[in-house]
Amino acid sequence: MQKSQEIKKLEKPVWLKYTKEEVKAIILKLANKGFSSEKIGLILRDSYGIPKVKLYGMKIKEVLEEKGKFEEPTLINLRKKVERVEKHYEKHKHDKKAERALGINKSKLKKIEDYLKSKKR
Image 1 (cartoon, one colour):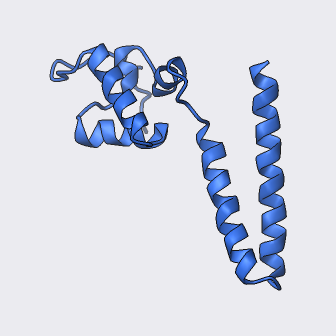
Image 2 (cartoon, rainbow, N blue to C red):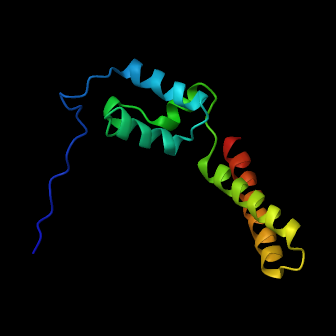
């Protein structure tokens, strides 16, 4: 039988050598190169040895929103998917499954865009 573990507080480990300002600068540098917030988190973990940005008391999304560089990852991924299906459908006009998938994905995209617009108000 497993016991429940105590919730660990997010404390910055002693081996982390970056300051909060340096991490912000790295995040903005990666955003300028065109990486999404998800990819930035992976790069920080793998290349810079920063396990979580929350250890510094912030989120990647907050840093990017501060500078106006944040775009919703769901929207980005859905737009890419719509582009792929459109490209396929242009080549294969008689593919009814692709036609249906295109309609479904476009409506998903519109719903999410409308939701995010209403949420910002």
